[in-house]
Length: 127
Image (cartoon, rainbow, N blue to C red; front, side, top):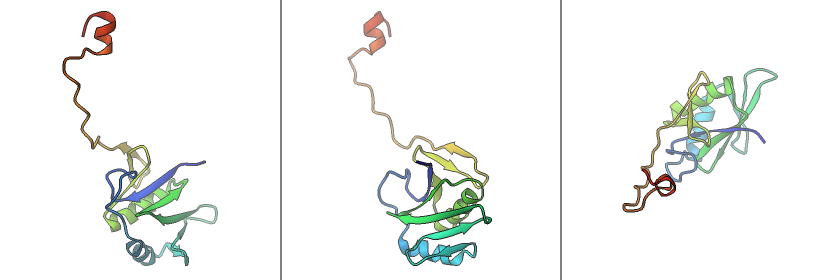
């Protein structure tokens, strides 16, 4: 099993909505001279004879398995065209040079319940 990167408009790839439509994906892939689109809507990106990646549209995002180097750069370029970003399942957002940064937490933490001491306070009598 390998790693997978996604071109998505979603806040996090696991969220729903804000999809890239299949028609948008096909138009972007057809406009890119470095991609070869097949009948199923998958696009081949060959940086060299030894480096080939498949870009697959699925459920509103474009997925690439084992993306690195040139594939990440191509994903970022396509994401810009589609008004999206490249991210992994752990919330990291990728740049064209392959670097990544953890996306800011997008959900507020649940507030602590008032009146109940924490574990540390219960064990040691302090807070």
